Amino acid sequence: MKRTLAFIALITLSASSMSAQATEKDLARARKVLASSPLIDGHNDLAWAIREDSTAPMDVGAYDLRKHTHGHTDLERLKKGMIGAQFWSIYVPGESKDSGTSARIQLEQFDIAHRFIAMYPDRLQLALSAQDVRDAFKRGKVGSLLGMEGGHAIENSLGALRSYYQLGARYMTLTHNVTLDWADAALDSARHGGLTEFGKEVVREMNRLGMLVDLSHVSPAVMSDALDVTEAPVIFSHSNARALVDVPRNVPDSILRRLEKNGGVVMATFVPSFTSKQVADYEHEYEEWQRTARQRLGSDGRDELRREGQAWRAAHPQPSVTIVDAANQIEYMRKVAGIDHIGIGGDFDGISTTIKGLEDVSSYPALFAELAHRGWSDDDMKKLAGENVLRVLSKAEEVAARLQKTRAPSTKTIQQLDGKK
Ligand SMILES: [Zn+2]
Image (tube, rainbow, N blue to C red; front, side):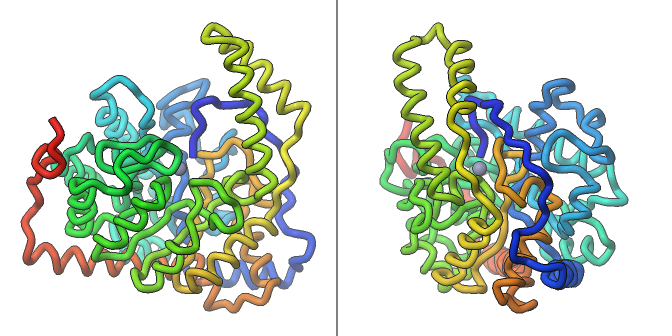
């Protein structure tokens, strides 16, 4: 998640690393589990944080991961967080009205990610397959996978999609927050009622390539259509359960129940407003305030709107959301989707406020300690941490190998399939 209207209401919380109930014993067990089996996080926006850095934008060298960064991610904290592998997000905004810039920005983001991975060879290692992740983990390095956020970046071209696979992309979120020519976004108008024929062809081509279909950010109808079409397991790289927090970015139970048959995983995210109903209601209230303020101030009042927005937030502190809420989301999705169909996708460096106890990438052991305290077995914790996602990656590789024997790269166009000019 990234906000276009960035607000500076960063709530700095003390690095309380454990919930009240979890004990040192729980934490020791969590650490043992994460040392023996890779924790694979589904979504981290470090590449975008480097691009947008206020002092040295796009400067991979200046954003020194050997030091404590002002973001959520650096080498020391990745180690403390016991991250075995990370899907680094290759994000490009969908809101840009300037046509023809998506591909350039996308390529630059691949470049930034490849450069920061190469810059710390003793700690990070590019991963393009499930086996690569296991190899990196054995060597004590963070297996570095790449995932694209937003199908707008392929600019309606299956050739571009294939080229992004060659650059290392192993998942693509079909949309970000803007509805495309071929898929509806969760946070935008539903123009197609799901996937268009070209959208379905994108899914089929991703299956053929071995690129995971990521259904975070899409509308429920797109989730459903993609599940109908796909031959490989899907992922939700960073989403929570809509039954607990009714926001469009979360996943309805009817979809969660389909993961068992599909084989996919929903990766619980730490976005506060997707995790806690109180925070979601608070954000809704803020947006309502913002809507009226915008009408009152007009298009020239952007600076004033920002100032008043900060004042509003100062006068209305965000309700507290803790590691307990995050664990509740995970346990709920486990109940509905099943223990074999859950994972974790924190969205660090893509969120402007954080959950108490989950402030940055060092926090994962505390979350697993909370689950240990709730009676999770070591095997269940390993599945959540990474074994489920590794199974999905392996299965997608198998499906791709099978499809490549019988199916040539698709040369279909959106004009042919959807009749668009
Ligand atoms: Zn996102």
